[in-house]
Amino acid sequence: MSRSPSTNIAHSQSTTVPNAEPGPDWTVARQLWGVAWEMHWAGFGVLFSILAVHSFVVLAQAKKKQGFGRKPLAVAINCLLLTLGVTRAVFLFLDPYESENNGFKSPYWLTKLLYGITFPCLTSSFCLIHLAFLEVAKIQIGSKKLQNVRFLGGVIAIHFVIVIIAETTTAVNAKFTPMLIVCQSFFILWGFLLSASFIYSGLKVILRAEQVRKQLDTIEIGAAEKKSGKRRKTSTVKVAKITFATSILGFVCCGLQLYSLFGVYSLYSKTVKPSPWPWWAFQTSFRLVEFCMACTIAYSVKQRSEPANNNNNNTK
Image (tube, rainbow, N blue to C red; front, side):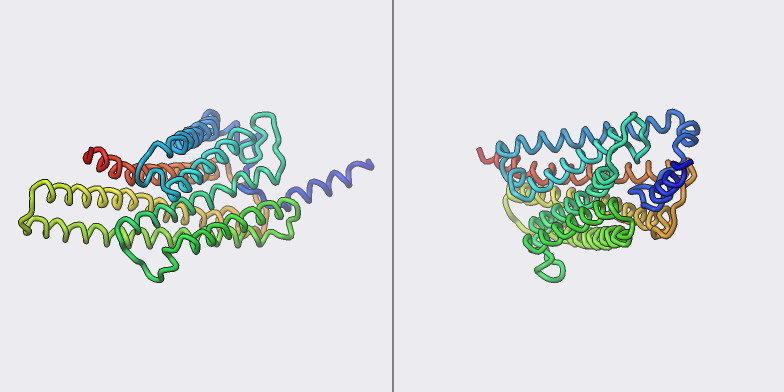
């Protein structure tokens, strides 16, 4: 009888702490999902592991590459993608969504940190690939500060600090729950800004490339020079089109964050166990968008590196 009050108090305290991702009743949910649950955590765990391995290999080969592939921006982007892949894979394989699926319960603060650190990695790599794209296309959007490496580095650092503080402090004390709202709001606003600016700059590049193509067709220059100019513009346009897909995924990711903030989390005003299938569908969609967005960023870095290598080979 003496243990009942303390047990009830402990239970009430644990339910007031907002989870990184509110989970359903796991006993009921796993029975309903069946193999779909295994496909979710194991499947995405493998996919993000592949992303991490790919980024590690690219980083290991950076010194051997020429052009953009060995520049600090490319190295930073791949470091962020490596961190993203590793943290997501560990999160899913260790103790996915605090489900104790694999017979192991990770510390609450570690689960929250592994989950939350992915978002600044995603937006930061998106920001840096956009900066690289603007440098190559020689386009300026708004203030010069928005294309300043130090300024953007400061914004990226602030985002990481906000996430680390928010995830660790709310794991210790539920009174700091509003920090999670600040953290998610920062991700949503920053993500929308990056996606919108990327679409704007991409359209400018495509329109400019079309004008250059018409000019090359009307100017009498050597066939080799004309072909080289068209090839460079075609490569840039290709990267612009790829980044369009990344921008759309960025908008979708921000939309899902908005839904989680108001629909799933309810602004952290109450603790509710979500229904199993809607929760599974939401988390699966979110992980899929994260992975696809990371892949398009990695592919954009690869495309930015290839032209330089090809040009160098042609000069030999």
